[in-house]
Length: 307
Figure 1 (tube, one colour):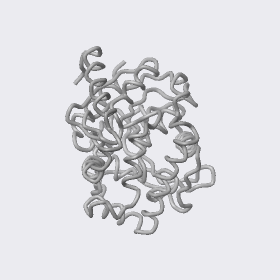
Figure 2: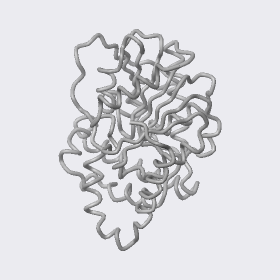
Figure 3: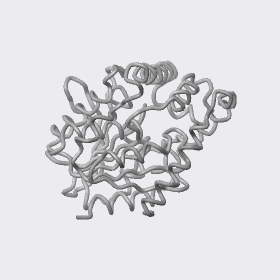
């Protein structure tokens, strides 16, 4: 539901102040915090349905990229998953339930994730920018000159960069669980879950099924190490300078109970992206589009199809 922006900003800033009290002493309780993180970053791992769905690989800049495509609508939309995510783990409810008569939905496995292997995932300092180029070129190869974006978490960061680099090619954009920079508290959370041995079996097993233990362990720890390296090198900046270059109408969605991405981030995005609006899911966590899929899909369809 939409809320009054002044009231929303006041409420979010109150939550920001609460999170800012995360002190070194409180970090002793990080084990309990980790369990909350695990509980709110869950994904969907069900097998795909028997609908008329196209899934195949295409060579993009020398890498074989796996994508899923469904729908016959004249509005193409690219879905971009989060870290270690795939089209099906991160967007099954959207692939199945967004309006396929109005949209043509494409979801991808980023390089090194899911079925877009080999090659293995490489985390360079510019991996978000690299993914943005791969995603844009994938859509060009598929024949889409202008399209919209729905990006979650890392996929949201990639979406912001893609929209900034190609402003005339993006119709609309939805991002959620997304940040343009990293703060110290978030970096500590990443480091606390770097070792997958600390994960619950419920959280760990689905990714083990996709990747196997060695690849999952190494790729996840590499992600954490890269985020720490970027934090130190760029003072936490992921794509702040790109936001002013975004031209498309943008919907920023945030879950009030998201413990991965702190509540200051949607406010920052709203303040720095022209023609943007913000919606808060009061009970939503980091995986709000999976937990509240009907509400999310309704909101997404309304935003994408309204004039």
